[in-house]
Amino acid sequence: MISTKAMPAGVGVNRISNTRSGISPTRLAGFVIVCISPILIAGNLMRMVFALAFENDTYTHIPLIPLISLFLIYTNRKAITLQVSNQWKLGAAVVPLGALAIVVARFNIFRLQSANQLSLSMLGLALVWIGAFALFFGRRAFQTARFPLLFLLFMVPIPEPILSKTIYALQVGSAQATAGLFSLFGIPYLQNRLIFSLPGIAIRVAEECSGIRSTLALLIMTVLAGHMFLKSAWKQILVCLLVVPLSVAKNGLRIATLSALAIYVDPSFLQGRLHQYGGMFFFAAAFVPIAALFVALRRAGAE
Image (tube, rainbow, N blue to C red; front, side):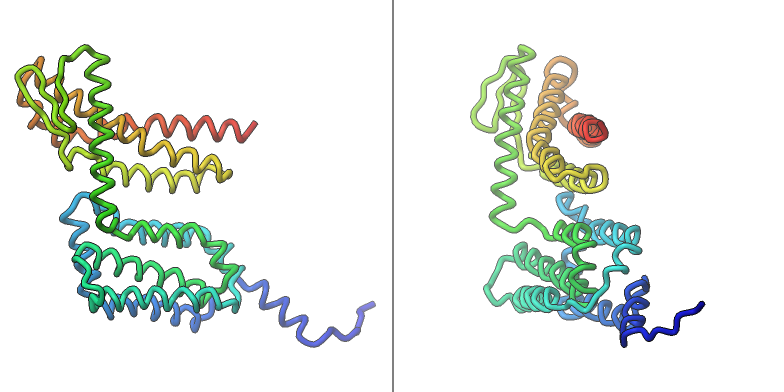
């Protein structure tokens, strides 16, 4: 027997709308328009940032960040679209902050140096994109896509003087690691801060030897891999905390190896192919321990 009991008004409509997994063209169009607006307002600054990414090795990761975020959102699109709602308040708060940062950078209201002007403009762009997502798709959809959205902050170039101080700290750490390896392998040396006097040669741990590029690359890879393969927040934090010590140790190994080869084999090793193109080999020296820790933590979680 088929029941003809009346259904409360609106219940059927709500259930149907909650099971839809699509995003309306209106929401999508609004989202795209808001995301494009910063590029139209401060297009010159955006072009300068991406030009910098191709000219300066420290920033080569910037163009890849939005592509990675987009890929992560696309792969999780079904779960995200199921959470689309009209909870727009979070986005309405974040978008104006990003827009303000872009306007301040565009007109350089605080007379920032060019590097910090670019950093502020990219921070504004990231905030507008993050806020636009929350504005048009709602707070619950934002929470579901939280990681790829916050991952966009890696687009922001490190501002001054933070960048200079970070590079110097990596230089000092690399020099200490190098001195430790010289002592371990019995290589005689005299050290004056960042300068080493060795048999027949003298070397300086320059800014180019700080490893800032590889440290950033290793940090980004570790954060991404932690999100994808580790469920516990403390495990993700643990592997991220190891990035800087391992990167410093890797730099020390690179400097000590090239110095030893220059002393005992041929001084040209300080300028040769291993110095110029051997970065990936030494990068593996830091990546392999982190990969091994990932495996150990995943196995521990499976038990």
